[in-house]
Every structure is written in structure tokens, then in C-alpha cells.
Image (cartoon, rainbow, N blue to C red; front, side):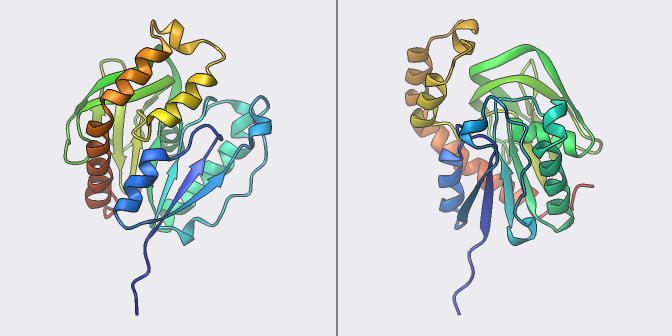
Amino acid sequence: MAAVAPTVLFLRNEHMATEALLGEAFTDHGFEVDAFEVVPPARVDSPAVDVTFPDPAGYDVIVPLGARWPVYDPALRDTWVGSEMALLRDAADAGVALLGVCFGGQLLAQTFGGSVARSPRPEIGWYDVVSERPDIVPAGPWFQWHFDRWTLPPGATELARTPNSSQAFVLGRAMGLQFHPEIDTDLLKGWLADDRDGDVAAAGLDHDQLLTRTTELADDVGTRIRALVAGFLTHVAGHSLPS
């Protein structure tokens, strides 16, 4: 009888934030990929919607992805963010490994007892990330687009950071990332087209700069994201559960 492939569920908290390269990396490691849309495109400007999430027990790994809204927004915590936090707690109790990306990483921090608040300095573009555990989170330039930052949940261990913010932590079988390992040029083009608040210009950058740098780093990032997923599966997904 053929072995059943493990399955990863990507929670697309908004339609612009897909798994992109991260989905490919999990596929390379033998995973079946599933995705669940949380806030539909028509509700981007009014995202406080009630959501019924799938049963987390049917998955081996769950990956909450990015979003443009703050995880601590009261209207969102009263609706789908609160429900997603409950999903993550249930998943941890069921032995499911968790990998949060940007908003998703902040959501993990908030779910397991940390806090999230506005950062004094946003990070947009490619930043050098210093890693204490390069076997889990490879060091080097990773893409950022965030205005908030977390404090670590009780019992968590920080794995990587920039001078401005924590970039990765592990807590049992959960790992939070502040950066965007999934970014490729196609995904970035969509984000730049949707940059209606002028975040990139406010950061002193331009769209062509970011796209050129993303193209230049494509091969390097492809190698490091496969190493990141391998490190997560090897060193985090088999460890004891968060509580």
C-alpha cells in the first residue's frame, strides 16, 4: 500500500498573500498542499467577517500567512482573528505543527501569550537577518513588509532578528517568522500594484529597485527557503507542543 503524503494547510488571510515559493518548498519535501481563503477580496476594506475554519486535525502542518491588517485590531479579534487563534490552539493540542509568516507569525505570538504592537520603525524591502540557528532559519537577506512587531510568548526561544525586530521564534512545534520567505517576483508585482498607501516610497524605495533586487536574489532565496522548510520539519515539527 502506498504511503499517504503529509498535508500542509496554508491559511490565506487575505487574497494578496499566497504561499508562492513556500508552497513549492513544501511540495519539494513531499507534502500535499491545501489552501483556505479567510477574508474574501470583496471585504478587503471591511475585513471583520465571521469565518468557519476547517478542522485542524486533518493536517500535518498549518501555515497562517500574511495580511495587511493588525492582528490586535479589536473588530478582527472579535471575528475571524479570534476564531483563527482558537484554530491554532486546537491544532497545537492535536499535535499539528505550525509555521506563521509575518501576520501569521504575529498571530502565533499573540495566540500563545506574547503581544503585538506598532513598531517604531517599519521594515519594507530586503533586510539582512541574523540567525542564532542557521540550521533552522538560514541567515541572509529576507524580504520584509510590516509595521508591527511581537514580544515573545512565554517559553519561546528567539531564533533570528534584525536590529529593529525579532524575526523568528520557536515554541514547541510552532515557529513564527516576521519576514516573507514566500516572496517571488510575481507575488511582489501584485503587492506593488496594490501599494495604495505608498508604503514603498515612504520607505525611500521604488518599485523597480525592489523587483530588481528580488530577481537578483531569486536563486539564493530558493535555496534558503528549501533549507528553512527542511529545518522547520526536522528541528521544530517533531518537538513538544506549545501550550
